[in-house]
Image (cartoon, rainbow, N blue to C red):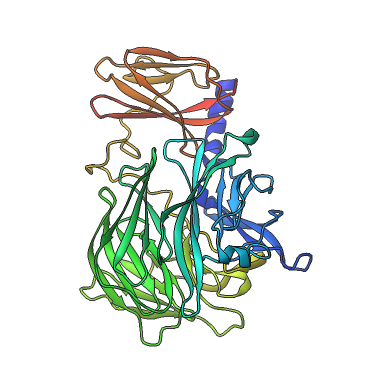
Amino acid sequence: MRTILAILLFPALLSAQVLPDQVWVLGTQDPSGLPGYGNAILRFQDGQVSAETAVLRMNFESTTAAMPDSLGQLLFYTNGCHIANRLGDTMLNGAGLNPGEMADWTCPTSGYVAPLGAMALPMPGSNRFYYLFHMGVRYEPEKKLSYGPFYYTVIDMSLEGGKGAVISKNNVLADGRFEPFSAVRHGNGRDWWLVFPEYEKNRYHRILFSSVGIQQVDYQEIGDTLACRYIGSSAFSPNGARYARQQHCGVMVMDFDRCAGQFSNARAVKMPPRAILGGGIAFNKDGSRLLVATQVSIQEADLTQPIPVLDTIVPINNVAGSSLLLMQYAPDGKIYLNNLGRTKAYHVLNTPNEADLGFIQRGLALPVFCVRSLPNYPNFRLYDVPGSICDTLGINAPIVSVTTSDPATEAAVYPNPFSGQLNITLDAALYPALFSLYDLSGRLVLRKKLSSEKQEITDLKLPASAYLWEIQADDGRMFRGKLIGTGF
C-alpha cells in the first residue's frame, strides 16, 4: 500500500519542488500601521503568480534577496542591512551588512538602497552552505550612487537548530567603482559565473563560484568604455549565450562562453536621443532581441542585424506615479518591471518572446507598497552545455536508463520507497562509478564512489521527501532515477 501511495504522490511532490526564484519578498512597514504598508511575498507556481501579505518584520528599499527551501518556505532573506531567519529574527551574526556611511544613513529606518544589490545562491554541491553576494553603495553628489565594494557573506543552515547562522561576513571580493552584477550558470551545469562591470572602464570582473566556494576572481577588458553619468543594470540572456550592460547613454552587448567565462564579439548599441534614465535590461529567450527600459518607454534592438538599433516599441501612459525602472525574468516566463517611486504594482511584459511584448502597465497589483525593490535572480533552469569541453558532470545530460527497483538492469537503486538503507547494483563494465543523491531543490545530500557490482548504503537519516539519484559510470554514461524517502 505504501508503494502504491508513493507512486500516486510522486508527481505532486515533483510539482511542489521550488527553485529559489519562485519566492520574492518586498514591502515596507515604514510608516507602520497605515493602510498599504507591510510586507508581501510573491509566489510563482505552475505558471501562475500569487501575492500574499506576510509578517517579515523588515523594510525593503531597493535591495531584496531571499532563499526558500524546496517546499517554498523561507530559509532566510535580507534587505541589504541584515539577514533574517525563517522566523523573521535577525540571524546569528547576520546584522551589519554593507558597512559604511550609506548603511548608517538608511538601515535604521528603511533598507539598503542598492538596486539589484543582493543575490543568494546555494553553494554548489552542498545542502548546508549558502553564499549571499551583495554590493555596497556610496553617495556621490554627481552620480548620486556609486556601487562598491562587492562582498560575499556565508551562511551555515545547519547551525542554531536549523535556523542558520552567518559564519563569515562582508568579505571583500573587489573594491572600486562598479555597476550592478548578474550571474549565469557555468557550462558544467553546477557552478556559477558572477560578472560586474567597472564604471567608466571596459573592464568586466568575473567570479567563479563552485563547490569549493570562491574559486576564481579576475577580469577581462573588452569593447568600448561606457562612461555615462547614470548607470543602469546588466543581464545575461536566458540561454546564457549573451550578456548586456546598460547605461542611459548606451549599451554594450557581447557573446559569453559559459565554459571558459570569456566574452567575445563586443558591440555597442546606441540609446535613442534624449533617453530618460531607466535602468532595466533583458533579452528574449534565445538572445536574439534586446529589451531596454527608460523611464517612459521600452526599447528593442534586433541583435541579428549587423548594426543593431534600439527603437521604441512600448511607450507608457502618463499615469501619475508610473515609471519604468528595472527588469526581472520570472518563473512564469514573464518579465516584471518596478517603478522609480513607491507604488503598489509591477509592470508586466506578458509575452517577451513574441513580437507583441504584451505590456500591461501596472499589470500585477501588489497588496503593499513596493519601494523600488526587485530581486536579482539568475536563470535557475539553465544547466549544462551538452557536448562541450566542460560538460563533465552529466548534469542535465541525456538519461541513458531510468530504473529504481529492478536489480537485473545495468544500474538500479532500490528499494523504492526507502527509509534507512539503499541497495545499488551496477554492471561490472560500468564501475568505478559515482553515485549522487539530490533533494528536489538540487542540493547534494549524499555522494559515494561505487567500486563493486553490489553495494549497500546503510544508516541513512534523511527526511521524508522525494529524491533524485544519478550514477555517473566509468564509460561516461549517466543513469538517473527517482526515489521516495519515507523518513527514519
